[in-house]
Length: 577
Image (cartoon, rainbow, N blue to C red; front, side, top):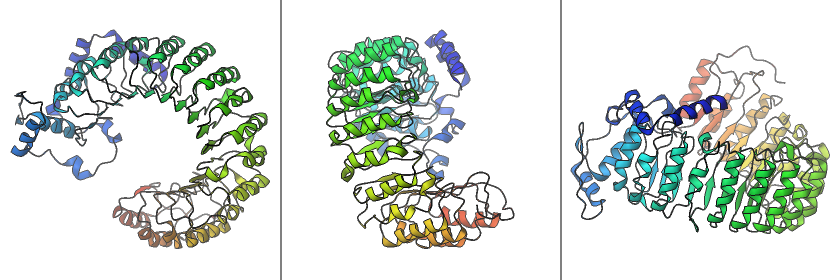
C-alpha cells in the first residue's frame, strides 16, 4: 500500500465510531471460537513446526484448570464459560486464545504479532488480562485491524501493572487510540519500552493526543516512532514532552522528514534526556543546516553510545559542522553514516576527531564513494585494536586502499564483521585480507558479494578454512561472483569442516548467469553433514535439474535448512564468466 492509500485507509477508520468499527468487525470476521484455520497473513509469522500449526488444541485437563485458578488473584472467583469447550477459566483460557492464533502462550510474554487480530479479538484479549498479572511484554504489532479499537484493551491494563514493553507497530492507530493509550499510562507505571512505529495515524498532528498525558519522571526508556509521518506539529509536541522523559535511553525517529524548525525544537529539548544512549535519525532528510543544529545539541547528551545518521543523502558536505562536537561524546561506541553522500572533506573532518573517539567499536561509512580515496587516513586514526565492525561495502575502494586495509587487518583483532561487497578490487586480492587472520579470530560475518572473485580467491578461502581461522564464521556471502570457476567451489566445499559454525551461506548468481551446479554439487552434498549449524543456503539463479534439486532438498530437510533457489529445469551449461 502506498502512502496515499494508507492515508485514505486511516481517514476511513477515523470517521467511524468505535461501535461502528466493532460491529463491522463482527460482521466481517468469524468469532474467535469459530477460527480454526490460520489466515493468509499468518504465513508471515516466525516459522513454527508443521505439527504445531496443524494440531488441534488438546482438551483442557483438570490439572491445567486448577493451575489457571491458582494463577488468579486470591479471593477472586472466576466463572467463565465458552460455548464450544465448556468451562475454561484463568490461564487455560489464555492458552486457548493464544494457541488458536498459532502462537505459544507465555505468562510473561504475550507475542501476537502478525495474527490478523480483529476488534473482536481485542475485546476477548481484554477479558483475559486478569489472568496474566505477571505479564511484562505485550506485542500486538502488524495487526492493522486493531486500529480504532485499542481503548477496549487499554481500559483493562490495570490488571497488568508489571508491563514493561508494549509494541504496536503497524496497527493503523488513530487519534482515539493515542488518547486511550495516553490515558492508560497511569495503569502501567513500570512501562519502559513503547514502539509505535509504522503507524501513519501517529503523525498528521495526532501525536499530541498521546504526549499530553505524559507525566513528569516517566519510566519510559525506549521510544520508537519509525516511519510515523510525523509533521512539524508532531515534532513540536514531542519536543515539548521530552522534559517528562528524563529516563529515556533509546530514541528512534528514523524515516520521518524533519524540517529545520523541527530539528531546532528537538535539539533544544535533548538536554532533558541526559541518559540518552541511542539516537537514531536515519532517513530523516537531514541536510547541512540540520547537522549544524544537531551538532550543537550533542553537548547535552554526553552519555550517547550509538548514533545513527544513515541514509541522509543531503548531508554530504555538512559533516564538518557536526563532527567538531563528536569529541564531547566520550562514550560513543557506534557511528553510522551509511549512504550519506559524504564528500572527501567530510571524511577528512572525521579523521581529525577520530583519535578522540576512544570507545568507538563500530563505524559504518558504507555506500559513500569518497571513502575509497581517504581510507588510508582514516585507518591511521581509528582505534583499530578494539573495532568490531567496519563496513566498507560499495565504497569504491582502489587497489591501494585494499592494500591499506589488508595491512590494518593485523591490528583488527576484535573484528567480528567484514563487509567488502561491491568493491571490484577485492578480486585477486582476497589473500591479503585472509592471511593476517589468526586461530583466535573473532570474525563472524564475511560478505564478499559482487567482488569479482576468482577461482584463486576461493582457493585462498579454502586455505583459511583449513587453518581454522574461520571457525567462528556465521554468515558467508559469496553471491554475484560468477567469475569463480567450478574448481573454486569444489575446493571450498571440500574444506567445509573448517566452517563448523556457519549458519548462512549465499553463493547466488546474478539473474542473467544461470550456470549449472552439476560440476560441484557432489562436493556440496558431501560438505553439508559437516555444516551442523547451517540454517539457510541460497543458490539463487543456479540451474538444477529436478533430480539434483530433489537430492539436495532431501539432505537439507534432515537438517531443517531453508533452501533458496529457482524452480526451473537445468539448461545447457554455460561457460562461467
